[in-house]
Image (tube, rainbow, N blue to C red; front, top):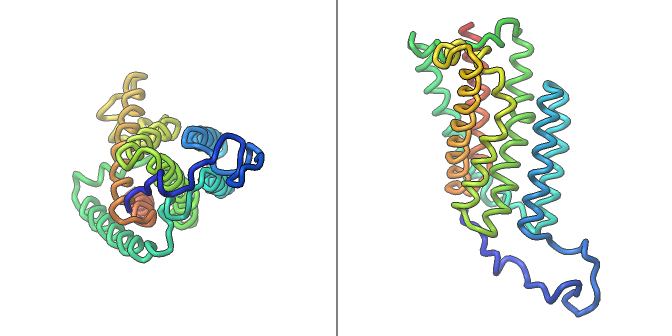
Length: 260
């Protein structure tokens, strides 16, 4: 869905501190600008990222719901709509079709990778060693869709993308969203070199290797963010990147668990 023209989406302000009728108006009423809205979004995301790193697990579900509500409130305050977040009712069916197709594609790719000897090493992860079937189900059906996909897609491909897109266009929205999405993964990637033997074999176990793993994770997720933004733009719905995001994470857990 193309970005709305910011010049035609909202009525022009009649003047500082004045309403349409010319009467004085509280500065807290009416939409805020792109700059203040982006600043508020970043503040919410920084706090959420630190909280998720400090208190992972079920607490992250509460954080995800609260953060999602706050981000939608910022979008509303900025004069945005459900369409700006990629959640317009008229695009949901199309987005769902995209999501189902992408989930099927990821499932096929992961199945092929799991069947190939060379591909199995990519799924090795020491974090699966003590995981039971109950925890796996919790991660795949609850923690991933709510604690990861909902908050990240709503934040980066929904609210942030929509706010920037209205003001600067899709290219800027994609660049800003994807860069910040990459930086969002700095803290979660700090232990990757230890958890994944395949990464340790490539980058080594030194401090420099750990830094390279984090840098690679940031670049990879930023590139993934570009893909997610393009899916949002082409489908007109946030459901498309949500489907791909869930499939990549959930099937990764599932295949890694089965091959441990």
